[in-house]
Length: 138
Length: 138
DNA sequence: CGTTTGACTTAGACAAAGTCCATTGTAGGA
DNA sequence: TCCTACAATGGACTTTGTCTAAGTCAAACG
Image (cartoon, rainbow over the protein chains, first blue to last red):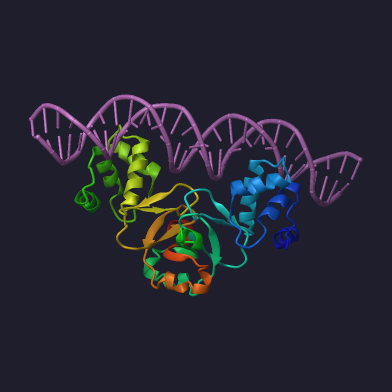
C-alpha cells in the first residue's frame, strides 16, 4: 500500500505530519490530482496544512523523482505518483478524465537524427486525446 | 509570407487592424509564442491593441483550426501557426526552446485496444524533451 | 456613397494557479 | 533534554487568463 511513503522513509526524507499526509493523498493507481485537489484532501486529514506547504512538498517529490508532473490541459498541473512504471496518458477532451496507458513501440526511436536539431533528447511524453465512454454517449 | 492572412481572408474572416496584426505576428516556421509575447509584439505595431483582443483573436484562430495551442511547459499556453502540417515538438528542458519535429511511425497505432479503456481516441500529441546544443554545452 | 447593424475592441475588474518571504515551529541528533 | 537546521505558515504578490459593459467600426445594403 504505502509504497510511496516507504520509499521516502527509505531515502531518509525528513518526515513531518504534513509531508506524510501529502504522500498518503497521492498514493495509488490512476491518480492525477491537481495541487489544489491535493490540498483539499490534505486539509481533510490535517486542517492546519497550508497551500504553500503542499506546493513545496509536491515540488520536492517531483525533484526526488517520486512523482511526475503532468500537464494534460491548460489548467493546473497534475501530480502522478506512478513514477516508477513508465507510462503515457489518455485524456478525455470533454471531461478531463485521465488514464495511464502503455503503448507499444518506442517513440524515442522514431525521431531521426536529422529531426533532433543537435538536441540531446532524453525523454518523451505522449498524450492521447479522445472521448471517454461516458462523454462519447452523451 | 502572409499565408495565414491569405487563408483567413479567403475564409471570409472579418478583417480589422487588430486581427491583421495578430496574424502577422504569428506568421512563420518554428513560431511558438505565448499569448503575452503575441501581445507585446502586436503592441509594437499597433499600440492601442488590448490584451483581451489578443486572447479573443487567438482563441478564434484556434477554433478555426488555423493555429494550434501547445502546452509544452507548465507556464503559459503557446500558439503555433503551423497547423497544416501535422507535427510534434522538441523542447529544451532548460531554456524552453521549441522546434517542430516530424517523427516516423504512428503513435496512434501503438495504443492497443486493451489500453483504450473504451475511449474514442482521436488525436495524439508527442513532446520530446532534452537539452538544446547551447544548454548542453553550458 | 451614406446608413445601418451586428460583430469587434477596449479598459479594467476579476479569478485561478502558483511563487516568495519573513516568521514561527519542530524532527531528530548530541 | 536541548539545539539547530530544516520545514511549515500565511499572506502578499505575480502570472495567466476570463468577463463585462460600453464604445467603435467593417462591410453589406440600398
